[in-house]
Image (cartoon, rainbow, N blue to C red; front, side, top):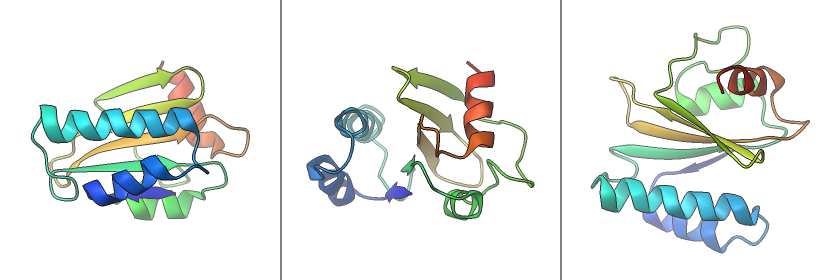
Length: 123
């Protein structure tokens, strides 16, 4: 799982050739959108997360700060969901008790199946 909390981490992710090229484009666009268009400060006002194949429910929930999957999952409370070409879902959360969060979820057989099921069910 990847969490981007500042512009330097975004820059490193964009240069990381091991990451999917489509994901890097989405991360760059979303960071620009949040920071430039909405004048948010990454880490304080906004966070970007990437849930990848193999990430476990406990790690996902702990990193996000709320239960999005697993036995203790909350009902879906995202503001919006987008399907990016069948390769990535993007969830937007605007919770009162946390920074605005954008969560990218890899569409892959090894991605948490409860999380993928929730995404597909809400499209």
